Length: 236
Image (cartoon, rainbow, N blue to C red; front, top):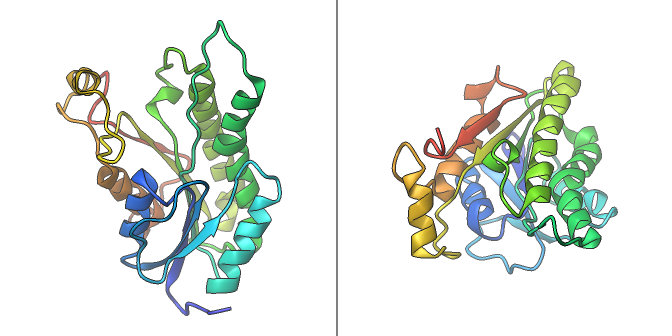
């Protein structure tokens, strides 16, 4: 075990690319950072970061992830539940295994990680979930994804109430469409999303990371049970 003294430690699930990588890079400015990754090789990890290969659908993964974090850093202060599964779920087709995977990763894994982490989380710890505007704006053809994010929002509020007496805060960030250069959309689809935003632009991974930093830090010390939408004013 390598103690981190007074430096806070953050765990970001799905931190190998995209939004998760941006969050890890941002928090690494003043945190020791661990990430989980599934099938993406870590790219450009912050110096000293710990990468943990984990399949969050596996019931054994929360305990294994937590053991790796504590073995390296000796403490944990922030969990960012970023890993997510987005699969189509058209009403005229049914794939129970695919739908179960959506809920296993998007809802059940955060609960399992928190349960495994509780012995190490003290007053001042923060949990931040990456939700989606789809939790309240149902996506056509992806109802199970939207339903999983709605469940995650409810879980966020429930855990905020349950853990508030311990001084642990639980919040969420709900992105709209995010402009990710490594995973570009069709130009026409991108423009259609842009046209629906008040600011006339999509969010970037760095925009989401900035919101996570706020909710994980002391500036939001009296904020819990909230879902912060970062969408450029999508469909206002």
